Amino acid sequence: MDVVLEKDKCLVKDNGLKSQLTQKGFGYKNNLLYYIDLFETMYLLEREKIRVIDGNKRITKEALNNICRKEIKDFENKFLVFKEFRDNGYIVKDGLVFGFDFRVYLKNNCKQHSHTEFVVDAKESHKAKEDVSKLIKSERLANTINAKYVIAIVDKEKKIYKIKIEKI
Image (tube, rainbow, N blue to C red; front, side, top):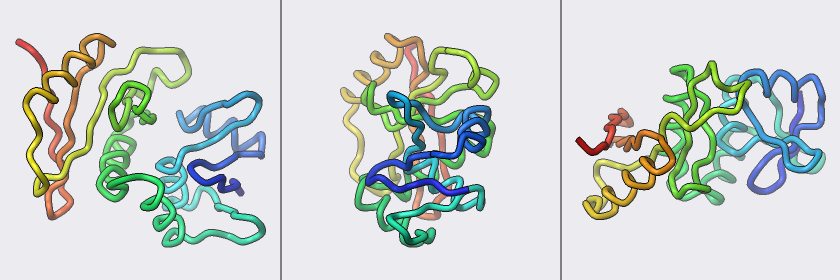
């Protein structure tokens, strides 16, 4: 089924596809239109569940990856983290509204309004170290919204280590 590329998201026109995506925790409504973000688009394209159309041409995975890298800083590592949570049964949404990379929900809560289970920041193990005061601020913010703060560290071999930060 086709989705239409619109810079930093894709428009879903087919009602049957909208219903399937909603049931599986993908996408969001904006006014009367239904969209999937670039992480969801790449995830579904890799699994051959959708086709991405730009104008009148079909977009390949490689072309979409290039678009994503232009639109989203550190896309490759963030996408690995997105995929890891999705593949383990979680619903993953954009977390920028709270200042994080992702909001993560338990899968059984995708049909009902629920609180965010985790807020996640994706980091690279071989990049500059994180300032402790930023970690403390992030944990406090996560605590304020009743979520657990997780840092997902991607190493050079693309293995992901998840660390939950919390006060004791």
